[in-house]
Image (cartoon, rainbow, N blue to C red; front, side, top):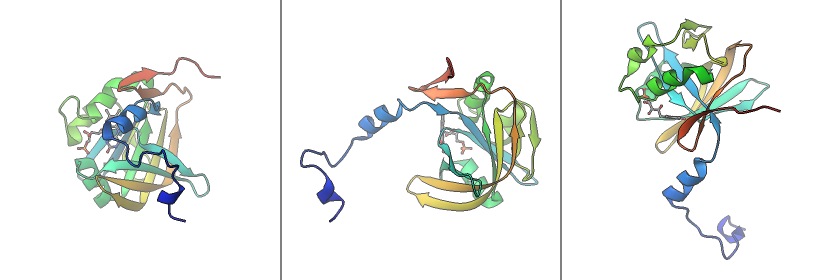
Length: 176
Ligand SMILES: Cc1cc2nc3c(=O)[nH]c(=O)nc-3n(C[C@H](O)[C@H](O)[C@H](O)COP(=O)(O)O)c2cc1C
């Protein structure tokens, strides 16, 4: 049986870009800054496409646009650090999303940064930082799925994450 023959007769075979985006706007996501560095330079971007892949072994994945500066650097450095932002770091998120027209090293002028094991910048105020080496990078059209081997973590005690929902930054109202 082919995949198409399993579709109900009424199913539409294609979903428009607008319909897809409208659906994805309803997905509440944590906001991370993914950084990478070598001895000479660091760069990074804001990302919501980050998730856990497995706990044993500890692996995460993220999806990064291959046209950007950060992807090129990450591929060459073979390291990255995922910094899950706190609600207080909305301006850091804007900066690393290119909303202030800054690129490369200039994005790091705001925030307090350290390094863990790989040398990729870790934000001291992040809710958590996951320091990774690149285990695999799978090309998929505009983006690449990057699988990271988590080699170090740093956790803040307070968990107050920055969210992205319906095209805007948001904060968690309550937890239960
Ligand atoms: C809330 C938000 C989430 C984003 N998520 C991603 C993402 O998951 N992957 C990605 O490649 N770009 C994402 N972007 C876009 C990048 O942050 C932006 O294009 C950045 O300037 C790329 O930097 P670079 O040129 O250094 O690669 C996101 C932007 C925003 C505002």
